[in-house]
Length: 297
Image (cartoon, rainbow, N blue to C red):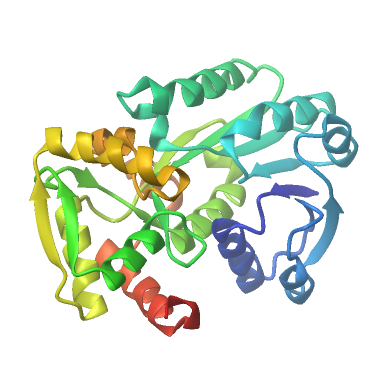
């Protein structure tokens, strides 16, 4: 039996779509919150059992890990320790953990917690097999918390503040590529067991080119206004003080925007044929989805 967390998120849905395409024959237990919309799970044609509860609830996790052969943990890395404790308690042989390349950030506030959690879990490989998948920034639909906001901002405004030159490299990864990767890792255990993989987009792209690409697909004439870093940091501080939760960017985000976030996925390509699409191809569909949504008006 396969246990899956985070199945209602965008990469979880993409994973299930691949399972449907392949007509996956095994039993799948999805751990979902009571308030989650799970209707789509009933329409997959897969052998799915839904278990409603919280991943914060240790007894819920322990009860639902019984007889599991694999745990695919797509939900937050911040819940990995609880999920793994239940898996080890129930002697689950293999856990596939979807974490983040955020662990590589030079800013401790962004990376320290991820490092502590992940490194602590990897020390438990004598009790359970652990495969770690580290996606870069995920995009692909209105469910993403990154590109969809950027698309919306560029659609609604005539000017876009670019903090610095925008030459830092990014390598966003499409949710569908991740869903396929999860499936390929799961079904190639003889190769992927106890391995670690970075899962990035096809090629690095400058942040300024990300913005220009979106503007082009939107058919807008939004102007880029390049702001020196010092002014950008000050502006972010003022914005967060005035707008608080409605502020679109934090001081740390301004600083991290100057940091390259490009990561090789060579190992994933070699081991299970990982071949993600380019950002230019992937973002086009998300922009089209945005333009079709009535709530953008």
